[in-house]
Length: 357
Image (cartoon, rainbow, N blue to C red; front, top):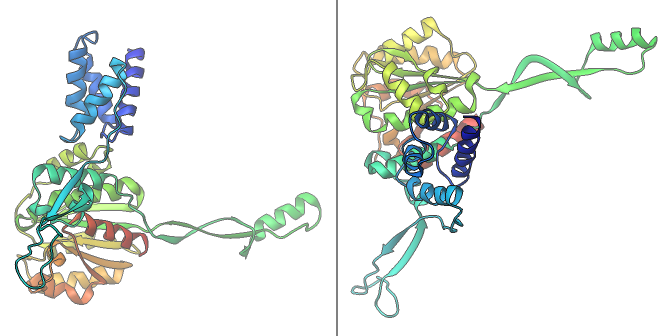
């Protein structure tokens, strides 16, 4: 088993280098599957790895090439990044319209990832949404830093009297002055994800973004789902594999696709927890079923506690968006930022905003 584990771990490392999401948890699942199979049969090993190590349809051709190279001794062919050809038909009949010299269309090529970056996730196919989710898992969730109460040794800064006196007693004279300065730590983020029926097309993508935040700073990130009740889901999002994390979250949330009573849930949060000094990140479309006046009161309390309040509305990405719902009108006076949350590019910009909050 030790030799088998070393062999399959090396194979998984090869897959990761080729872009396949073969993380450590998927590798453990492969080893568990091989316990019940004949490892001397290449066919059984092939299918066990294909079922456990691949996450999207795009991983299958990469898996086949790596399997042939790793176990069959074949030379892996160099492949280029998949591209999507975008053909713009420039008609020639009409004034001001342009076309090629011979009347043909002019093709424009852009990478698949670049095409998907600005598209609304609610309008993507299953394969395209899986690709966006894979890129979200690789998002580096940077975080702005804040001054801590702890100190560290420094060449300049405040005089460290204790160390200076201790050195003087040990050496018999004051040979030099010691200094100290405050340490820094990542600024905390408290995220609320609306899982009501109106947010169903965006809820999974928002939770995957929350998973990236938790993975980047586990101790400085708290995540709650909001709908008809407040549910803490930070522990479920700490799983390394995004698919496993989302499965655990789906089991923990009892109010999927229900209504939204954000005012009551914020009141419960402020009574039980705290957002003092943190960035409060609320992802919702503002369709409040509860009392908008209660929501406004609780948002005022949250704004006094939090360092910054950012509201993520998926509909903000459209040019004709207007905050006309009762919930949005109630919270607008207490927001520091109102940002879009409908595409991969919007989440990248949100991550940069958190890195410089």
